Image (cartoon, rainbow, N blue to C red; front, side, top):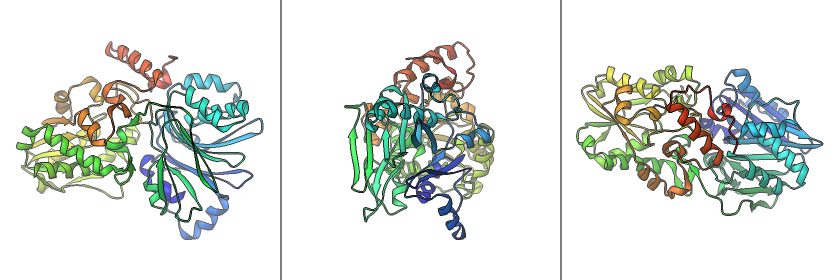
Length: 474
C-alpha cells in the first residue's frame, strides 16, 4: 500500500493517509504533504502503528471543503464512521455534486459529526443504506442511483469485507490486480501502483460495478445495468502518469498522438517554426509526437528541477506561479532568436503558462506558438478537478486569439475535440468532455452549470465552487 501510493503521489500533494484493519478495529495514520520516505529503522514502528492484513490509502487533492492546513488534515482520507454497531472505512477519488442534499439527508443520523470532505457523505450514505438493507450490493446500488457526481471507492466493512465500486458513469479510474502468487488482491486508481509492487493488472472496473474480494479472488457484480460510460478525458492529457494504462493503451502513447494531431491541424504554424520545446513533464510526450510528425528538432531546452515535486495545477492559488517559476528552467542560448513550438497539456487559468512564456521571452525567443493538447476549457469541472467556477477559466471568457495576447504567445493552437477523442481510442459518448463542451453526464451538474453560466455572462461574481454554493436540486 505504501509503495502503491508513492507511485501515484502525483494525484494529490496536500496530504496522505493510511488505514489498516486487523479483524477487530481500524488503525489510521494521516499527515500533510507528500508521502514520506520510509527509513529502514522506522519500518517496525510503522507496522506497530498499522497492524492488520487489509488496508486502504489515499493522497489528497482538495476539490471540496476548506483549503487551510487544519481543514485539509481533517479531510484527509481514508475516513471511518459507525452507525448502530455498523463500522465502515472508506477512501474515494472524485467529487460529489449534490452535497447539499446529501448533507441534509445524512445529518439526521450523524448530527454530531462535522462535514470535512465528500468522502464523509459517501461513507455516511453507505452506512445508512447498509443498516436498512443488510446487504452491501443493495446499499452500493442505492448510492450509485442517488449520488450525483464522480466516485471511485475502496472500502472495508466492520466485518472485514474489502470492496470497491465506481459511479454509474465510471468518471474516475480504478483498476484491480493481484500478486503473482495470488496471495494479495488490490485496487488502484492507476496501473502503476500495481506494477511497482510486481502485481498483475486484471481489469478496469466498469461503470456501476461493485467488486468484492476473498481468498478466492475477485467477485464482480454489475449493479447498474447498461450505464453510460463517461471517463474523464483530462486523465489522458494531464492527470494520469504517462506509464499508466487505460483500456490497454499507455497514456504516453495517446499523448504522443495528441502532438501528431496538432501538427496536422496547424501546418502553417509548423512551417513558421524552428524547434519544438515542451513544458515538462506532461508536455514531453506530445513534443515527441510533434517532432515525429513535423520533422522539427525537439530541443530539450526546457528542464524541470527534479526535486521541486509539486504539480503546479493542483497547488493553491497563492503557490502556483512561484512554484512554476522555480520548477521550470529555460536554457537561454538554445532558444535565443528561435521560433518555438511549445507543447503544453492544457491552459486552465493561464497564469502558469504566462510565467513559462515570459521566461522564454527573456531568453530571447523570437516567436512562441503554444500547442495545447487539451481543447479550450470553457466550463467548470464538478467531478474531481479543482476548476469549479467559470471566472477562473481563461477559456470561458476569451477565444484563442485573446488568450494568446493575455499569456504573451504569438498563437495558441488547441487540439480539436475530434482529434483528442480519436487518439484515446474511445467513442465520444464514452468520455466526459463536460469542461470543453458544456455537456455534463450527470443531471444536477448540467443544471448547476447552465444556471451559473447565465448568471456569469450577466456579470455575476461567483462566490466559490459552484457545487458548494448553489442550492439547486435535481
